[in-house]
Length: 187
Image (tube, rainbow, N blue to C red; front, side, top):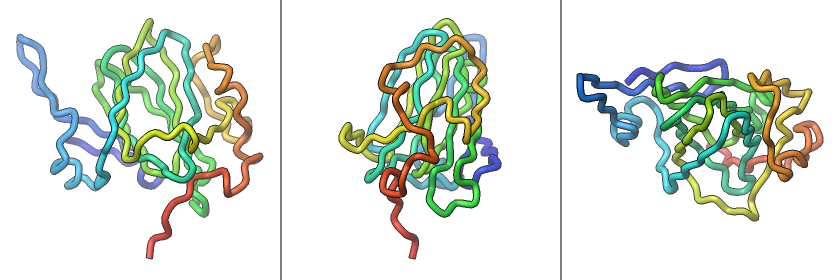
């Protein structure tokens, strides 16, 4: 397994070992021991699978009182995956990183707690699988508008399909600290 660091601390690209032959391929999508050795120490409690059509843009989502770390990957298709640092006091607060994930490159993205997350679908369809370190709670949702000019994400799709709910999210600059993820203080 190869771990690639990004310009934002804690946000990691994971390239699993792929074993190919004439029958196809094999890879470990997750092995707790291997991931811990690579610095990914979260315990994942929930897996989610999403199916979307080309042009779909989902996000930017996060949970407030129960922030989730995520390990995301594409099973079929291709997406542009985005994580925005919304950790209070972080030197990279408000910065984003985008990564192309596909069934061909088999890359994963590890997103720590304290990030908003979203993606857009580039292929005709995509199946997107992600592990979460805390349970989803609809009463704990937070969101940032996907087109926030203060963040300036360069989405590679122009004709987007976006839910009404995602169209209503505020800009990051309009949120108070009470509306951002509550991370436990290290001590």
